[in-house]
Image (cartoon, rainbow, N blue to C red):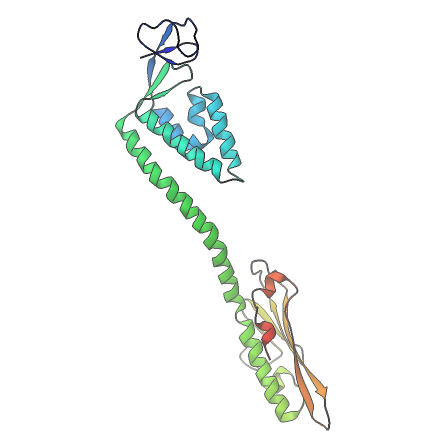
Length: 263
């Protein structure tokens, strides 16, 4: 097979004028070279057009490189490059890949086609796994953070129940020790308690939980509080009001959406 030395078009044996460019062009003979290294370049670095640069197809290589660069912000270019590289790999495997002047043909081998087919299955699977990981991993971290913060609401709920019971009996408020509240991490009633995630403090009267660690977008040092208040009514009896507050950080509030419902 011969090609035009000017434009690279295929020439019929004995043809002196190129039907595409019209020039009086002597056919350029094709030299065969092993396509093994080119195939490997395409397989490993094809998305950046390395195999095109190596074979002298600089313009196509630049297109591949540009599309791969745009892939950082867009989805379509990488998909296009995937298809183009796949076509290149099959061309190399079938000995149908040439340099721009079509004076060099890169000769393939049967094993290359097998590798290309495996590559077809592997790359989409890798992309799908990447998408799943991008969606699932943040959710897993979110669930982990919610699990760590989950101890706060039951602890505050227990405190409120003890405050209510103490108020019914004595018509007043009391410290944790007086109402018999045992904070998480503590073994007896006292002014404080500590777990792996929170420090609990008696506001006397009141309840405060401070996170020791960052929970995703909720930085350490934020406070969840429950402060009971007595409102004087007729006679000697007073009504009990429970004031609940969550951190101002939106990343903290979203982890305990029902905390303000504690009564």
